[in-house]
Structures are given as structure tokens and as C-alpha cells.
Length: 363
View 1 (cartoon, one colour):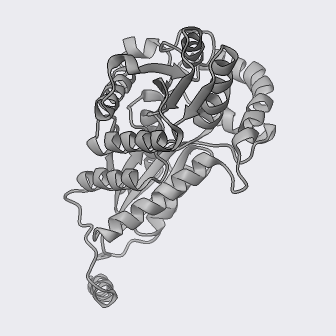
View 2 (view 1 turned 90 degrees about the vertical axis):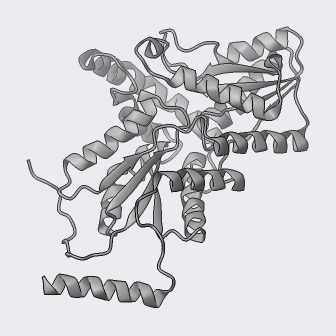
View 3 (view 1 turned 60 degrees about the vertical axis):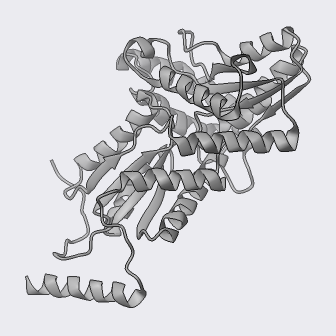
């Protein structure tokens, strides 16, 4: 087995710590060709679709990648911005804000972002961090609730990179933050800001991304963690049990997924006489296709067509200051024990570099 070329190692080089934020991914453009590449990578991941590979290859390449890219491209086009993919833009903004926050707290930390599918790819981002001399890496998948299809898949990507690396950095993973107090407080703050600006609906729909129902029976904690997030958010907002509903969106295929499904639920609420709903997606740290198109457009249209009148989406956490502060707290807790404190001034940092070079020359 051959290993990828790496920067030459110098004994005595200063240790460097970094945080890598990992999100799901996005196509490069809202076009059928870009969606075909993106969906081909995404849907071929065995963590995402647990069907025997030969059968799934035929379904994926013979049916899905022939029909779905054009439809998905139209949906992406409806939410695409002049600067590009909302998910990519928000994730990059979160990485920049987190680095600024940690450095303001005295930590000499590099923060980068990567996408599990698409660009910037996890492996190329890790190569770049290694070239920058990173020796300790905290991987923070931006999925609040653990799921094999998301969190574990991000860990797989890092492990696959490590398999071809000669010098693997010291690694730590954060695999969930669904009940983190700062995360819950940031969610609640976003809802309160939304209510102050748009008014309060009659019920709050908490919509989480769906996964196949069988994953719960197979031991995936995702379903339970979604409900815990919902309960804690409701408590933080002072909601009674009848003031909110937990639903699941983004079903793929004909198999049973976690229920109740979001769109049928909002139609039912409209039929029961509800006229004004608010929706929030507490399973996403940044707005993306599933929030901006599936909920803000499709679910809203379904609610109005069924007799509802007003349906408002509460924005995801994105780069809200309270969320970035909470993300900083989360990273700090998991960085404990690693030397991350910045030296007091540039001259001191230069002196450390010179001492390290001297040690390397002496050896």
C-alpha cells in the first residue's frame, strides 16, 4: 500500500491544532450535470442507502441518476444565490466566525470547513491542513443529532483519508450536540427573534430530516435525539405540548421512514382549522435546500392549498452571534488538554519558531 506524499517533517516543529467543520454537501451549480455528479456521490454512500450494492447500482444508475438530476436542479435553482449555494456560504461563514471567536478567546486555532459530498472535499481540506502543519484535529460534523447516515459518514471520510496518510494527526470527533445548552438557547433565541419580527403562529412545526424507520430498530439514536431536542426547545420557549408538533421530512423511496411526515402533517393542521403556522428545522445548523425549498416553498404551498393562510420558516442558526458563541463553547470543551493558547505577541511567536528550527538543526 502506498501513502500520499506529505510535507517533510521537522523535529521540534510547533504543534498546531485545528477544527474542521463538516457539512453534508452541495452541487457546484444548479444544473442537471452538477446534480448528477453530486447525487451519484451522495447516494452511493452505503451509510446513506443500505441496500446491497449490485442491486442499488442498477437502481441508482439505471433510474435515479437518469430522472432525478433535472428535477433536483430546478429546486436548487429556486434557492441559489448570486454568490452560490446557501449551505456552502453559511458553512464557510460559520467557520470564519468560529475561528475569530476562538482567537478572541486566546486560542491559536485554525478553523476550516469541508463538505462530505462535493467541494470543498474532506480529503483535500485535510491535505491542506496537514500542509499547514496541523498535528491535532477536532472534527465537528454540523449535525446536532447523531445519525449513521450523516455523522458516521463524516467520520468515514476522515478515516478514509487517514488510511492513505503516513502522518495521521491526533484526532477527536464531536458526534452530537442535540442537547447542548448553548445550542438549545440559540435555537430558542432564533424563534423569539422570528416571533418579534413576524408575529407568533398558532403552532410551531419542528421538522427534522427523515431517515428510514428501520434505522431506529437497528440502534440508530437519531429519532430519540430529535425528540429530545424538540422537548428542550419547547421547554426553553415555555411551550405546552399542544403548542408544537414534531415531524420528519425528505422521504426517499417507498419504504417507511420516521413519522409523522411533514407535508401531510401541515395539510392536516390546515384541515383542522389552523391558519398560521411557524416552522423550524432544528436538525440543520445552516439553511439549505431542505429548509429554503422543501419547507419554505413546498410545505408552505401545501398548507395554503389545504386552507391555511400564513406559513413562516424560522431561519436556521446560520451565523447568528449566539450560535457562534455556543459553537465556540462546544469546541473549547472538546479542545481541552491540547495546547491552543496563542503566544502573547508576534515577536514571541517568531522566537518559538526559531527555537524549533534550532532544535531540528541540532538533531
